[in-house]
Length: 268
Image 1 (cartoon, rainbow, N blue to C red):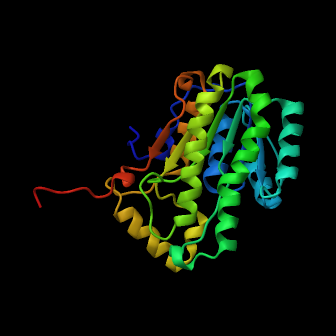
Image 2 (image 1 turned 90 degrees about the horizontal axis):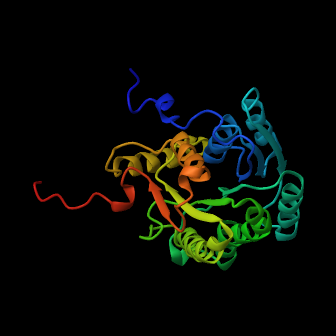
Image 3 (image 1 turned 180 degrees about the horizontal axis):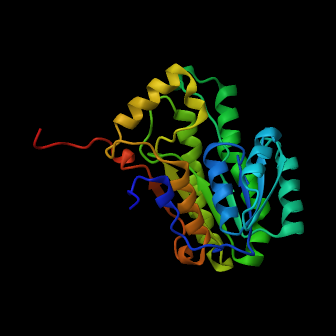
């Protein structure tokens, strides 16, 4: 019998659950975005992947060969609002959009006093403004199909994290935007949610300093392990399905209680 920690046991949704649907996933070339794209296509969805590096998107496409859905892709700089909006309109006109997953993002670690205005603007632009551009551009296509928007956020976005003033500000802005649009677009049958993963093991942790910091974060997680990309992907697929239609305006933290911190131990 498979254990609860076995990655193969994570796939719980029925086969071809999302057949006939079309989705857009940003940052689909690596990590969480790749896992989401692969799970959605495995469930039958036709996915259009967007990312910075076309070779990584091609790798995702190769991994998606032979599944019920399909994976198409194009590289795009999400900081270019005009180009991003045009690409979403092109995808919507050609394939329609049932789902938009805003996964792409990035930041660097620094004390607030060490963040320059240029660095601040770069992080806000990618992690907040680009998501607004993508979501607003997708609106008419989501409205036609009663679609969903899922924004990949961070664990503890409503609590604060030292060294991430710029990124937390951007993600908190996305959460506020998500909840506001959930109210405004509910009449259109569109759901919008944020998903907050905990520490996720990715190729970016290969550097010793990053590895050491990741180990510290995992050790501080009450359940004692990282969040798997496949776990995030399964949650995203659920929210995109009919079973998730009543969930909107939520921040769902899939982080092993990392956002709660260690808590007080009255028996220690």
